Image 1: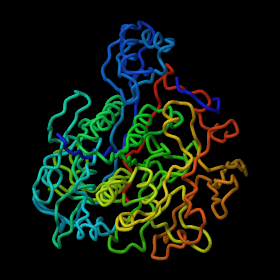
Image 2 (image 1 turned 45 degrees about the vertical axis):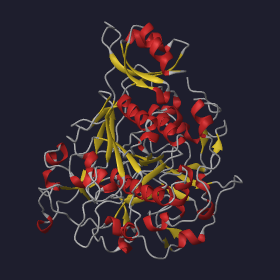
Image 3 (image 1 turned 120 degrees about the horizontal axis):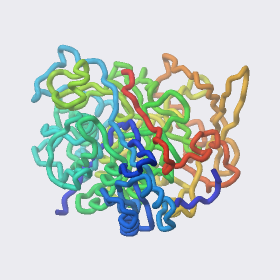
Image 4 (image 1 turned 180 degrees about the horizontal axis):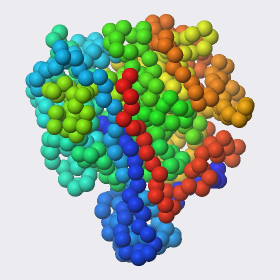
Length: 575
């Protein structure tokens, strides 16, 4: 693949529909003979109108208007697809892959925790992350709308209403039908679970809320069905709806808890293009890192977008009131990305998280051992960690609504708490934990004045005149038939930053005792933790070549007449 500059061929507030973790599988590509069977594609041109006219001219049928990326969903035969691929007015033809929600159940709530539908369990997480102190001060998400792209929510008052019993769901959109109406159901369960983490207004004894932002409003985008599946076109159409209606509903945050294995550079993925448009429009996008850890370079789509806030997962080690033994979850995907960006930016709780799931939802029926028989369900994943950060962002924007997405990202990172040192080395690297464990209280009260994403130009990225790579470099070592990579970060001057070298041999083991503590030497001792050098970016150039080792960089094209190989985030073991 050629490196270098690369051009790729009512005033209601809304709620964030948190995207669930996805497993992608392509629709089967029709055989060239007889050539009359139609399959689903995404066709991109200079405008949605032009894409529509070219599809119709080729004899195809449009299924989705995807104006956010100047594209349409379309049903095409093999011959029609080939004709469009050769049409000079058409920029790209992608296979319309399918996505499935995934996660992992935890241990079943204890007998003492079994409750009826109207009872409340203390979930601990708002206290764990300092949100309870903010709630006491009236910083609880009011006035901020979160959009959640997932499988919907069911009609539990903790999800649909504020503590004062006011309706918080401003709209629910179903991309597959194009209808905006109140559905009030979640056949799968994942959407309800992540939404409850972000905003549940259920109040346990002692006045502690289950959710991070219990008075935030919601816009629900129900893109996933009872099996947890959604097409690329439905996901993009959902993002399009959020961006188009951000002012009408006051949408400030979009939660995307889905992830899939990248099949191209970040700028060439159609979901990523829509995600970048959302960030450019002023919406803070929070995305999951993925559940493919602990291997290096496993960050998924759209978490590999350099602009957004990508979230990894930690676990409280089954001691929710003791932070000293908190651990990084082994399933949490690890950076860097193929384009040399450090990901994730931060980590949040993602092990055995209690959230709301209706007992008739697919998740509860398929995994009854993780359901309490009432409405609470244990689940693990970076999907859940993402929802915590989404709630924190809502708190930050309530307190300081003038913050831009880049400023929110910067304050969230500078206020995070890295894992402590063991001797002279951090117990987790920046490629595993980013800036560290989020803290809601510190993020809201941060006075950091810088911005993240230094050196990036999202306008140039979107039009294709310039793309970027991050500050990570690597060299390869072979010994006794085994290949290892050493990753290191280059500072703004191009020189390696001291103490960041980390040898990755594919067999890193998380040892007991790697923990967060009160002594955060990392944030005090390393120069790059103040400047956040990993937020810097560099123009893509022919000199940047270490990502050539990836199979897709040797010529894989989304429009190839092959079955799209995509998968992610299987149901991970509980931690």
